[in-house]
Length: 259
Length: 207
Image (cartoon, rainbow over all chains, first blue to last red; front, side, top):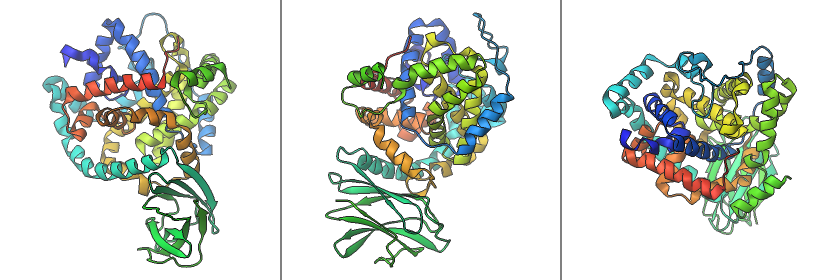
């Protein structure tokens, strides 16, 4: 690892180094001027990934944060001489070394053991992580495949977003793409269907309706990938029994024209 | 909108015309300097500017909305507490803020308790996440196509390595396992992937 340690700039700005590697790298960073420039530049790049993660925070967050800052003393300005590493609680969240205070405080014996092992045995630490990684792989593959298909629809050049209201409350958003022959249907804020009922979506063409996806029973929001749109002209939504139905049960709670 | 925005658009070619991080850099830096002097009103304005992305990023990484809210609160209070340590010579204010936020989120998912919940966290977001803000998110997705468009210019390995690390909070050793790829390859792909992303986005370091 030491022979090409500067190649870790990418993993470093992605916060993807474990503690032992990060310590080695930050030490290297102090001695490598070119690295600092590259880190700064890649850091600006990585921040743009946050652009894609915009979400409306709960309204109470603002009040909680404002309340807490009123009782939180600010650190004094930093003197030219870096205070680390003797005062970890005051280590600045600078670009070179984001604050680790909370992380360290929370870090478990397991985490410390892993870090020590990593120092002693190089790559050996990840063996400890093996089990959860194995567990994660199967779920991840399913999730990624589904998410990738949704992404492909949402980012298609001809993606079109349409909204409709649900008569029983809530909103449906349909992002459809003729070129992908697919749509992503999103339900938000619908009324609670109850544990034995589920919301189901339909591809409607004239008077025919084909099943287009089913939310889990009791779920009042969620996303469904609809493939094989064909000449569907309307996306519909009904309330069905938990396992879904082959034909829609009246009433149609929402109907969004997509052509 | 600002000249800077227009410049960012020229740099990156065809864009959606939606303001993004580069359009708010100056504002965030100005506000952050005021925050460093203890200006609570400036902090409130900074909150409006960055909270949706701080919260969204936390939610994307930790998945659980309640934990994401905690992480976002911790990160934003940390911004207040350490604003005096922000050094504009080292990078933009937004980079500084989102570095804190991402670090907090990653710390959270790597804690032992979070490891316990990790499999649940990986369950398909697409079908199970109880979103309250699906509409806003869908709109945001469409508005922020530039990042996605640029991500698509990467190789599969570059893109997966970067998104697994950044959005899922994995260490690069874990990423190597997940992608069944040698460790040196993963770290190289993270780096050259980010460099390609930088070129596509037209990122400049604010100095």
